[in-house]
Image 1 (tube, one colour):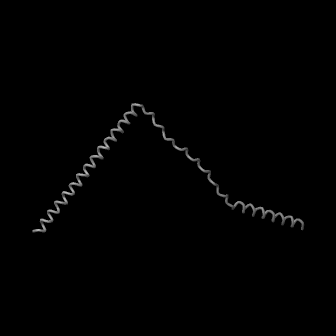
Image 2 (cartoon, one colour; image 1 turned 60 degrees about the vertical axis):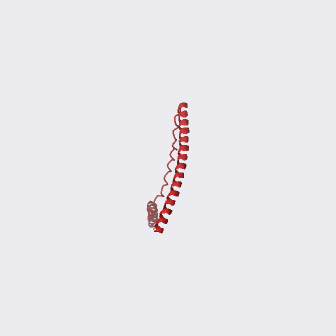
Image 3 (cartoon, helix red, strand yellow; image 1 turned 180 degrees about the vertical axis):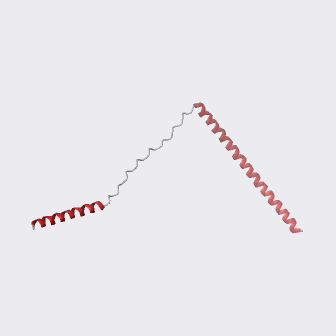
Length: 105
């Protein structure tokens, strides 16, 4: 009888171990968290080559010339705007004369 109990206990232990192993084998692995990628190094803007003094002087003169040209163009724009204003007044007067002439007929 003791043998039957030993055999029965062995079977129960074996079944329990097999059940535990099969349950643990069925459990999925937890998802792995990917490692973060290192941030790329910031791009450095290349430093411009130093400009020769003569080049700086040329650029300063060019800037002065362009500023003078801008002033001249602004003056020309003012003159043209004044001419447009005068022409508009002349056209308005002509329209008035034509209108009066048409009405009087």
